[in-house]
Image 1 (cartoon, rainbow, N blue to C red):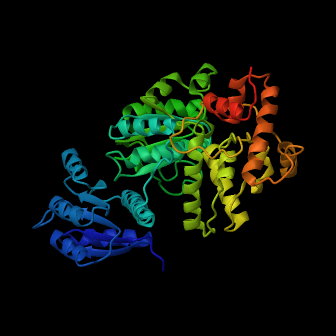
Image 2: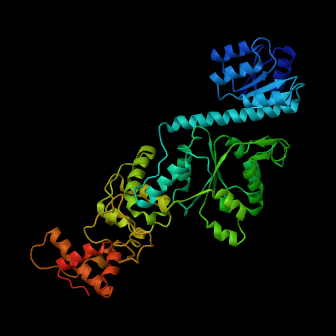
Image 3: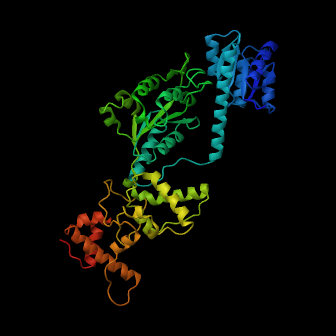
Length: 492
C-alpha cells in the first residue's frame, strides 16, 4: 500500500504512542516509534527515514526541547510537531521559537492530529521539492544580460536595494524580464537561502486568490477536501513575488493591503492568526498611476508597494544588448534543448538590432530558438531572416556591424524604416542600384558604389537634412559627413 509518508512518534507513554499510531495509520501514514529523546536521536542519526515527527515535551532524560535542538542540528528540514499535556502559551512559544513546526495539546484531538500531520507532511514535501530543484539547478546563477547604459543602471540599483528588506515595485512592458530582475533581487539578498514564492495574480481566479495567498482549512469551501498552506506562509523568512499585481481585483487589493501592513492573517475558514516575515516584490506591466486615476487600483496599496521602484527597459531602448542576448540564448538552447549551434552573421545582427521587438526579450528568445531549428547548424545570414522581421528593420548603412556592448543607443522610438519590404526579393529589389560602373568590380568596390548611390538618394529624400539622414541610417553626424565628403556628395 502506498503511504502518505513516514512519521516518527516520540513519547514515553505507550498509550499515547498506540493512539497516535492508530490515527496516523488510518490516514495512510507509516509510523515508527521511540520512547525517549535519546532513542529518537539514535534512530535518526542511524539513518532511519522519517518525513515528520511528533515529539512530547515532557520526556525522562533528554526532554522534548533538548531533543528538538539535537534534531534541528542533524535534520533541519524535518517538521517537528510538539505535544504536551501541560501546555501553556509560554511553552508553545518556546517550542515554536526553537524551530518546531506546530504545537498541539493533550488530550489529543483526532481532528487536530490529522490536521497537524497533513500540514506538516505538505511542508516536508515542499522542502524536498525545493531541495531537489536547487540540486537540479546546480551552480546556475540568476543574471541580467546586457551592458547597455540602461542595463548597467538597473543592475546598480538592484545591487543597492537587494541586501535590504525594502519592498520593491518592478515595472516594465511584457517580456522585458521583470521576473528575472525579481529573482536576482532575491538571489543577492540576505534571504537567498529561504524560499522565493511566485504568484501570478493574473492567472488565479478572483474567487480562489485568497485561498492561494492565505491558505485554507479543510471544508472551507466546496472542493477544499484538505487543508492547504498559502503563499504567504510558504514564503515565511523568504520573498513573495506578486507578478502582474495590476490585474488583482479591488476586493482582493483591500484584503491584501491589510495583510501586507500587519504581516498577519487567518486561513480561509480558519480562526488562528498566523504571523509571517515576508519581503514583497511586486511587478506589473501596467501604468499603476493611470490605473489609480481610472479607479482600478488602490492608491494606498500602490504607495505601500512602491518603497523602491525599478523599471526594466524595453529591448528597443537597449539594442546594443541584442548580440549578447542572442549569444546567451544560443548557449541555453544548445545545452537544454539539444539544438545545433548556429552563428549569426554581423549583417544579420546589425539588422536585428534595428527591429523594434514589440515582445521584447521573450520575443527575441523565441526567435532565436526558431532560427536554430530552421538553420540546423548553418550560419544565420541576413537573407535568411524571416520576412516579417525584415519588413520592420531599418536597413543599416552597408558594411555597418551590429552595435557592440556599451554603445549608446537612442531611448526614443525607432525612426521610420528606410526600406520596408514584404518579402526577401522585394527587399533586394529596393536596395540594389539599377546599374554599377562598367569594368572590373570587386565586392569592396560594389559596396562603395551601392553606399554612394544609397546615401545620395536618401539625402534627397530627407531634403538635404543630414541630421535626419544620420538618424535614419544609424550613423553619427560626423561619420556621415565624412562619408558624404568622400563620395563627393554635397549636403545643404
